[in-house]
Picture (cartoon, rainbow, N blue to C red):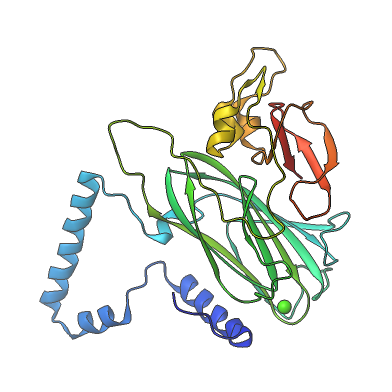
Length: 309
Ligand SMILES: [Ca+2]
């Protein structure tokens, strides 16, 4: 992954990359292709047999597969809503579903009836991750945000980063992660590519203790406002979740009531950004990030705090 070319040439580069990716699920380095082509048929058989044996050995001793084609977006469905304005404002008249976020709309409209310029989109999905560190890649023309379990990891809104690929490494525990991608197109070409791959698995040890998620380096203007440092409700003691910056479902316990929230419904909620007791499902306008205007925030069904809507 090298430095990105200019904005204009990025459109072309993205087209070529997307075409290559669709053409084959397995891409060998060009040097490897030349080497194999020069070899005799016998040599090819030896190479193939060696690969098969290596795969059997890897499977037998439990080496995790790290190929992007295996790890990325395996089975999750994106719900994508579009707005015919540049601010995700009002009713979304167009929506679609997709197994991947890989769209190059060029200078055209993303859907029939939508404008080709000055539109926005929001894609959400819930994807299962095995515990590990994942590298997320995001490339968009013009602007994009990436939010994972309520934490903003990429934000190029008003940053002049159109076309430049953004990479972030995210530690995720075993379980479902809620992912949201906001996209904005002003004029000219429009494209959006989001993907991820596992880059490391947790190091096995004798004492499986929780690994604190340090969270992203806060960008100016996106620092969450102060939260409570300790919260207890009828549905659990959320202090460990606050201290370790993990999703409230990790601290959830049902209180046994017939209409109590369950782990599934909690798992679908974004991660709480403002901890503190509140009435379940209520919505308020409140400042979620410092130096930003108030926005709509909902109280988790665990009554442990607020997440932005
Ligand atoms: Ca554009």
